[in-house]
Amino acid sequence: AQSVTQLGSHVSVSEGALVLLRCNYSSSVPPYLFWYVQYPNQGLQLLLKYTTGATLVKGINGFEAEFKKSETSFHLTKPSAHMSDAAEYFCAVTLSPVRPTSGTYKYIFGTGTRLKVLA
Amino acid sequence: NAGVTQTPKFQVLKTGQSMTLQCAQDMNHEYMSWYRQDPGMGLRLIHYSVGAGITDQGEVPNGYNVSRSTTEDFPLRLLSAAPSQTSVYFCASSCHTSGSETQYFGPGTRLLVL
Image (cartoon, rainbow over all chains, first blue to last red; front, top):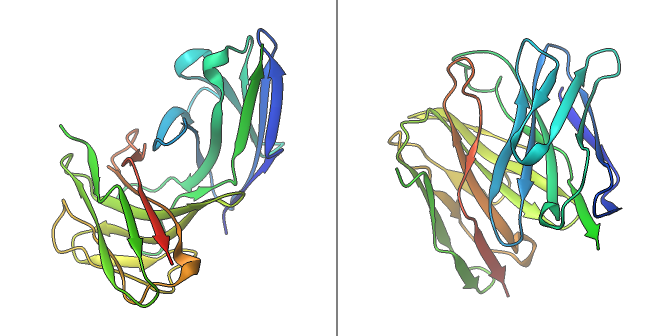
């Protein structure tokens, strides 16, 4: 079964400092991995995703993540935090089949990490 | 495209009442799902559908029903609301051709059950 673990429900960084949000996954087959961001009172929007190919993935707003199979990790980073990055971030995993049949295809989300950026 | 739309945005129910949360998408996506979001628990999958006429249960299906009669619509029904169903509900859709697995989320429905 797939699962996602996000370490740290709350992370605080100073403006301009490195952002590191941790995500570890469990999957018996090659996974597709995602990071979503949620601003207050809004739905989720995609930051970046890994499907196949290059393991370092770049997303919007200067974020990037690296898929490390040996560590079963997909940590999210940004070199310099901005006040506007304050939000909740979710890691998600799903299996990679095309044209899935019922029962074999679903997304699993982590419990989220709330990022606070200090002035 | 309007994307994924949800109605209502906010609803208050009394225990035992029933209601339907509406979800529609205009992107011709095959896959649709319902999640609930509760503090400290992230998003939990309630039900999902991989196409019209096909639905399946997620992690927390009890107390909820779904149907998928068309590609566009995926309503979520609460048969007899309970205070434990107080939550924010999100609908999402995606298209599962290779490279297009991103889920698109609606703005959410905030439900309070008294």
